Length: 92
Image (spheres, rainbow, N blue to C red):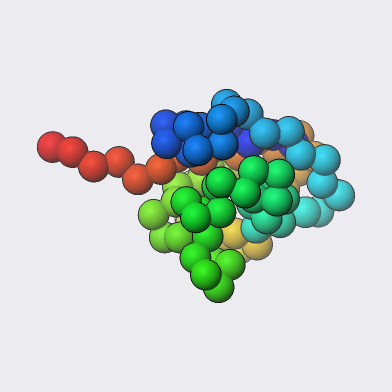
């Protein structure tokens, strides 16, 4: 599975895409943890001190907002999953 990073997340990690080899049935949360392990600079942007994902982090699983999925961050991912991470956007 892979993770696509956008804007400041891409700058923090220094890469556009993260490739992860996760076991079948791995959750979105487990993918986040694996990505942060590979790219520690993302930790401050994605996780609070308790290891919980910041509310301002927007993630799509195969085009669907993770926050709108029944299991949220605990949603199991298919083997060919793509996660897209977007930082908060402000402006007017």
